[in-house]
Length: 260
Image: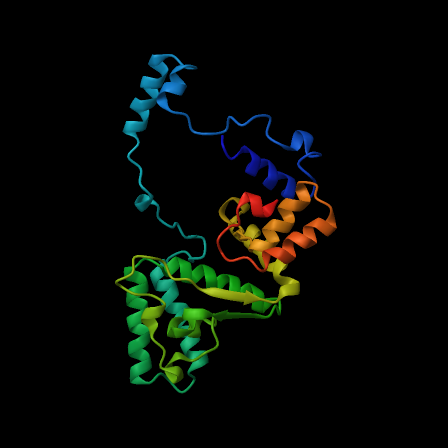
């Protein structure tokens, strides 16, 4: 409730208007906050509050229960995700290493496939491979990067272009038995044709199973000052003067008297 003014300011910034002119864009009141049990008791009967508490106590969910569910449609009939990933990897090996794998490279591939299966990431690799194959079939430039470049399996699948055998990279930066988290395969796609890849993913896997991640931007001090001053209706010359003065302040917020 005490942050109502901040909420109004952020809303005005989002809609490129001032707080004074935002009107119905602002929340009607400042009641969007968590209330104490005593405050709730003023509005709801005891039996309803007791039932709410009873239901809450039955909810034992923790975020540790969340698990990734990878697509299964990519596996041909008669195959498993593990066997299909191995087959695609072996095909890629014949293409990437036409003269055959060295003993060390073969050992690395087997080590990776074993760990991928153990961690149940087979379908994840198949999904990324499928998306990259689509892009290449449409002549859309793409390139895997990051720690995935440490993987011989990613190289064999055509996801990355760096031969890890020649680079002596550490695979455990990509997947580790000690880390209980999925691998992160970053793939860059040609900017002008990125939308084609996104639409393919929607068609292939369904819009309900695909999403774009959001980027949460944070303010630098001078930028926050300019935006807040603007939505509060300050004139441009005063905003510029404040921003200029702000650059000379320390990280400690100035006093209200100094701001005046």
